[in-house]
Image 1 (cartoon, rainbow, N blue to C red):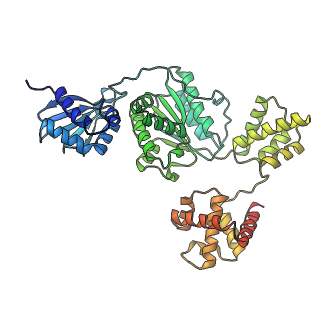
Image 2: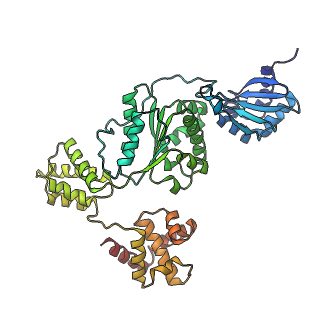
Image 3: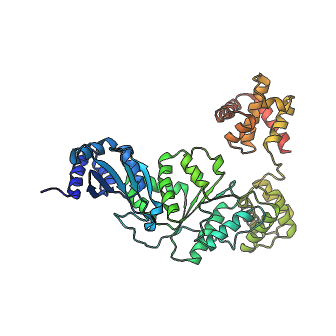
Length: 461
């Protein structure tokens, strides 16, 4: 009696099982089943496109040998997973790199067909304080806030998918992206919203891999309606986690789910990320949160004081707002410190008290230092023409000055190495070497210490 396509695939699985460790078989082959075998074409059901990639990268030779032994030398392999809402437009065709030269049509699926996701409610991990109502607005965050509210108020609109919010630390990125999630839940309590940091996502992936729960991990994340990941730059240099997120991103995006990401820099400035992932970050809308302007700083201080029940004179609020310029987080910390000092010392909050608190917390009236200011100050200190540092000259005095510019641009202006190299027409590696060179010399070269201190002093005046 001729064997059925299911029995033939079981024969293949028996061969594969005998040639790889049990844990690998359970992870990658246990949930693969035979859909059909007709006219020399084997079609296998797989959970996702990620499985196709892993099977053909890891087990192409073994799979090919098993198929040829069971089905014959001319067998052609096809993979299948379900279409999005049965829409043929979502079908993807790629040329198989596996055991046959066949074209493999495989389709996306809203859930693992072999282990359906039970739609249980989940904890969105959102901080209830981070609402739009508590989010102070100004020109420095107007665009980002408007886009965030548009997403939250109309989840069916996918114009801004993904939303990529970037800016320096402490400017309100976490508050904004969580406010979107909270508003989405307010509009639709049944929506599956999840906020996680990139580090938590990575640790969950690592644990799932070690405990052989990869399928459950994918099934869970593919069931989310609005996925919010904070500090996505923390995945830099982690190719396995990036690859996993790439497939989850694709699934969510293809199924019209909203993706919201935050980072300390724009996608174009990110290093250590796969190009295909960066390209997807740019698919939707990238919006920047700038350092808080004066109006926003005053609003944040007023709101924080009211929340903490403090009565702070306007002149004190103005003094703090003018001198604490870097981040909203710093402003909130100053209010907490003022409250502690006033309570312990049993005195009213005055400018003198504010000045004492700020002396311990921030550098007052800190001058804005940028690349051009650094270049001019270094050139003046070494008595050379600023323009020569942009040439290819390798003269010792010019090379030393150029390295000093690189070092201070990284330290004071917080510029990425790539950006510094671009300004000086040098490679990332050259800038990295220059910065490390000065950092290693500083502890042992008194003259270099003096040079750095004098230049920094001039820049901070």
